Structure formats: structure tokens, C-alpha cells
Length: 389
Ligand code: KG4
Ligand code: ZN
Image (cartoon, rainbow, N blue to C red; front, side, top):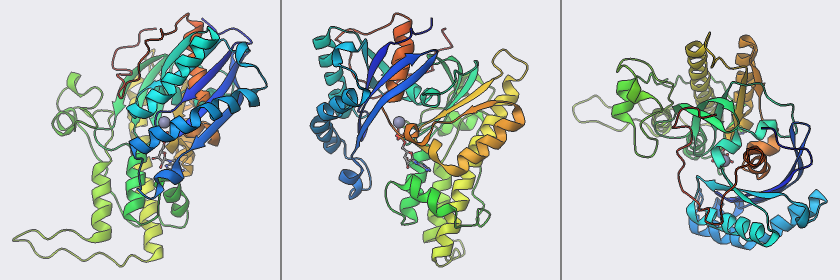
């Protein structure tokens, strides 16, 4: 079912370190952003070089009401004109999610309208559809963020099947750690992106993982999980999963040197870490991280060619979709396959509430909503079930 024209949904997003609210109106098949208010906590967490959950949830408490009020005011509407409230209720930091979810339910109850919980990761995949022409289905959905590197088959915004995922670090997490190793600062992804443009991407060859079902089953960590499909495959078959922790270790050794091992000749000392060497390592790391994405997409494309799942579109979302090298490589890859590449505009790459409101529109149109018992969850099992719609 298609959402109806003129429907107004307020989205609320508090899963990590951004307090965000947005009003999105449905117009002729397009989720149109009427307002997009964000308060980011980067400064608060900068000195810890990472998000401190307790500080994050307290800051959400301070900011949630002003940010929601600002979103409604900037949209030029009254709260009484809203048809529903969408809220990211999973996955994320539980204390942070609690603040947004409590606020969403309170607004919904007081306005007498439904509350709709949506998955933050799935919401990243509709960010490229904000203020943009409708997509053709089926699609591949690629989420590249600080916490996720997930590849889905999609038949619609709410019909996803997970076909690949990282078995250890997410790509954004790897960029952030690489930036820390190179002393670039926080948050690392954008700084590494900027620094890479001064470096030679062929300066260092990083290992490209060749993940087979056996290696994924044996190597998957609790954090990254056992891969998307490894349990169903022949042990020697390659999976569509990703791995970034080996690259990170290789970078660490390149910068600090390989630790000495008993009974082995002394390892080579690392080259001096000059400004040029930092740029070269940043560019080489970024190129290798992106190469892995394109390599998995290529194999996913081959695996689905001539099948009903062959994608017409590639939807990309998450903070790392702002990366300039990734955007350029994906554009080249999609063009050679005749696939319609949809990347978010810069404002919608990072966490925002417009994508939450947009995904809530699709659920609302199906007649779906949640009760006031809606609870936040730290994890999601998104796409683990076969396509259901
Ligand atoms: O989607 P997001 O805002 O939050 C999560 O849901 O995780 O993504 C944040 C991640 C961080 O790891 C950040 O370093 C990375 O996105 N990021 C980038 C760039 N901009 C943000 N990574 C590489 N290049 C960028 N330009
Ligand atoms: Zn996100």
C-alpha cells in the first residue's frame, strides 16, 4: 500500500550521540522533508575519543524537547496536524533509546495519534529516497555506518533479507580506529577521508579477506556475529560477509612495528611516521576498505543475476556513505552494471530523524503502528528472516 498524500509524520532519533527530530510529509510517492533538526554531541565525547553512553543519555534528556519543538516550528505546522510519531527504537545505546522512545510515546499519547517504532539500520536505507524519485525494486541495500556493515536484498523499504555482514569491526568503526592509530583525531572517518586525498593509495597493500563459510563459522566474534549465511553454505564456499579487524592490525603494525616473537629474526622497524607517510597509509587503508565493499557487491550481483532478486537499484546509507572515495567507486561499479545507485545527500548520510519518519510512513501506510508498550532494544534481528512482503 502507498502512503497517502499530505500525511505528516514526526520522526525522533536518539540511538547514539545525535538528538534529532524531523517532520516528513508524503507527497506524490516521495517522502518530503519539511524540517530536519539535529543536536550533535561530538564535542561532549571528543575528549574520550568515543561515545560515553551515560553522558549521551543525559544530553538527550536536555535536548529532546527543544529539538522536537524546533522541528515542528521549522516545518511550519502545528503538533495537532501530525498524523503519527515515528521513533527509532532499535538498535542502539539503551539509555539513549529510552529517552527518544519515552518522548515519542508521550507526544503520541498527548496528541492522540499512533507511535511507530522503526529499525535504525533499515531507516538508513531510505535516507537516499528522501526528497528523491521513488526507487525501482528489487534492490540491494548497503548500510555502512559506525556500528554496521550490512548487505541486504530488498523488495521494499520494509522487506529485507540479510545476505552479508561484518564478522568483526564495522567499516566506520575501522575508519575511526585507523584515524586514532594515525593520530588524526575524532570522529575519525571524515578526517581519514580528508587526509586520504593527499596520499598515495598504492603505498601499502592491505590484506583482503577471503571469507569462506568455514572461516566465518570458526572466526565470527560475539560482537560481529557469525556472518549472514555461513550456516547454510558448503564450508569452502565464499560468503558475502566482511571483515575489517585484520586491516586494522596490519595498520597498527605498519605504524608501531611488528611485535617481536621468540626464535624469529627481529622484525623490520616501521618507517618513520612522516606527514606524507600518514597520508599514504590513510589513502591505502581507505582504498582497501572500499575495495572490500565493491568486491562483495560484485559477487552478490553475480550470485543473483538472471534471478528475480537481480537488483535494479543499490540503496546506500549510514555515516560512511559520506566517504568520497566510496561514493566514486560505487558510482563506477553501478554504472558498469546498469544499476541505479542511490546515495543520500550529505545531510542524510549521518544519523538523522528524517529517515526515521520516512520509514514510519511506509509502516503507517500498511496500517501498522505500535502500542504505548513499545520498548527500545539494544539489538535488532533485522533481515534474519526471509523476505516476508
Ligand atoms: O550512521 P552513523 O552516523 O552512526 C551509526 O549509526 O553508527 O555513522 C557514523 C560513522 C562513524 O564511524 C564515522 O567516522 C563515519 O560514519 N563517517 C565516515 C565519514 N563520515 C562519517 N567515514 C568515512 N568517511 C567519511 N566521510
Ligand atoms: Zn546510524
